[in-house]
Each structure stands twice: as C-alpha cells, then as structure tokens.
Length: 148
Image (cartoon, rainbow, N blue to C red; front, side):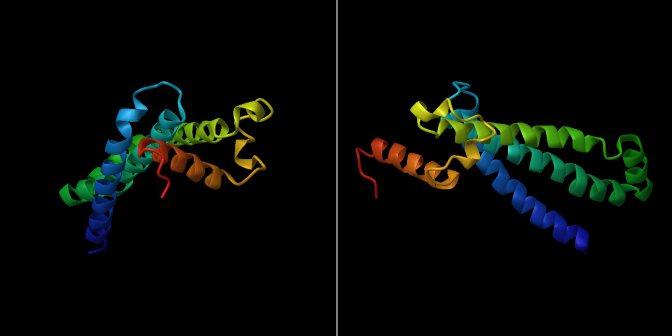
C-alpha cells in the first residue's frame, strides 16, 4: 500500500517537474550567460536532479521488487549509493547557476567588489527582494511599462 502512495505522489511530482523543466529549457539552452539563462539553467538542473533521484530511489526499487524481490538486491549490490554522486553533482551545478544569478543582480558598479560566493549576502536588500524587483521591472517593460 505504501509503495503505491509513494508512486502516486512521485508521479504528481514528476508531472509538475516536467512542466517546470519544459518551461525553463528553451532559455537554458541559449547559453548567453544572461540572468535569464542562469535562472533557467539553475532551476532546470535542480529539478532534473530531483527527478533522477526519485526515479532511481522510488520507482526502480518498486518495479524490481514487483518483478522479483531479489532483483533490487542484485541491482543495489552492483550500484550501491555511489549513484548519488551523479545526482548531487547535477544538483550542485544547478545551485551554482543560481548563485551566479544572484551575483548578476548586484548593480554593475558594485559587482566587482563581490564574489559569486558572497552574492547572497549583498547588503542592500536580501537576494529574494532583489530578484523579485528585477523580475517585476522586466515584466513591466514587456507590458509597456505597467508594473501592477
């Protein structure tokens, strides 16, 4: 019973994750190093790492155990937890893109004084406030100056 609840919740998570990745992917492949690229690549990689980890640790054991209980033991014996290294590297790369985005949100005249690793601590406001303000300006510019 618990396996099927996990499968249903994971399936819903996968559907939402697909929608998020699908929406960000066109921007993530532009590779123009813009804030839009950094946001898109970061979110897409973080979500892809979640999906890959979920497939490996939630769906694969359930499928293997339903076919033959020994299969998961055999498979896990061959791969072990080392596969988590791949998922974690994808996740870390996505987070790095998001840190660079935060750095790009620092005004150009002050950006040289801050590293990517210091960007989340930029003092004017918190990073979330800067991100929302910049997104509102961009959306307002595309709507013809309306900022509602």
